[in-house]
Length: 206
Image (cartoon, rainbow, N blue to C red; front, side, top):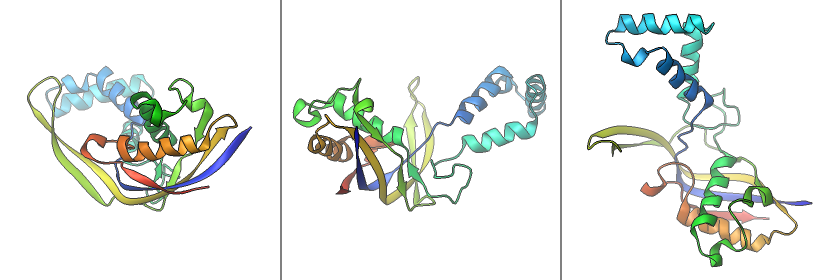
């Protein structure tokens, strides 16, 4: 049996930076078509169209993939840019599993990384946000050189989000709540956590 717990959290800020299946598709198309090796716009276009034709795709199909690959948020309806933003379950579970793997027993309790997702199941957490509150703009050093690459990621702030956690009977609810509170405060959810994003607190737990 699983016991449901309704949880509301508040995050000071949050960056999603999702990696969509369409992102992988676009990368594969550009790599396999040789698009990035072409030096002129005309040869790029020729290489792309030739590859798409071989794959029974149109240029419109490719452009649609690019649009979907650039979506900055997970939403209740991912095809509607005005749909409420959600914090996806894999971001929440990933945050908790990382906390289990990096904290002492006093924090992680009896939880183990390999079984956590079995004992604790989490839904997406729904926010009331529908658009970004700002952009985190910075230069990031590339791993392979001393060059810096400019990155811009949209963020939302003062985020109240609600979802449900289901736990097996053998799970200690207070231990999980303690772990969750620590994860929100110290580990963080989403992207750019080392820069202070994704931190928050539990507002309600019942």
